[in-house]
Picture 1 (tube, rainbow over the protein chains, first blue to last red):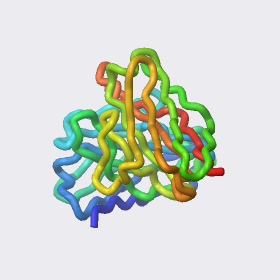
Picture 2: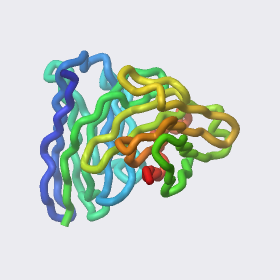
Picture 3: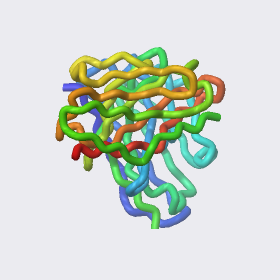
Picture 4: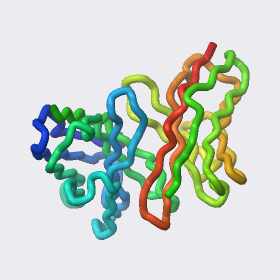
Length: 118
Length: 108
């Protein structure tokens, strides 16, 4: 079935680094744009980063620019988020999500991985 | 940049119609998507491009978008519809994706 599975979330100290992974299965991963979207405890959804299907178009929210890096490996059906300079306010469940709609909705979501910066 | 405003909560009795607004100046010129998130679960896309439904989403879920307000409408509300709902759009000009603050739907 269509599935995204995130991994890599853990407890990390302020200033530390972490790499999140998201493995896709059950659909044509290379046709889909992907994003990382986070949700702080008890809060709403917040878009973090986007990567186009071909890996060329890449965007970040301002608060993570220069600290986070998104990448993908279509041969491995995976997308990654390298995070450095982590701050307490980066604490959240991180979801990977994808789609292939013209207006960039997210059809497919993983179950999320928790990142705690403390 | 866009700031999408949603009411924190909406309450409705079973069988009635729930309407959840998402407000921003001239939002009617954008395409708005809606997600449902039940406690402890990942979000699910329920409406895309203002008023289209992904396969598997009941017809009770519909959307509209005009002027300064996009609206998610849930007809014949059921207890199982209780969830947080988020509107979202893609700001083409800045290549940022924006979510509303979310609305908690309570079925009385």
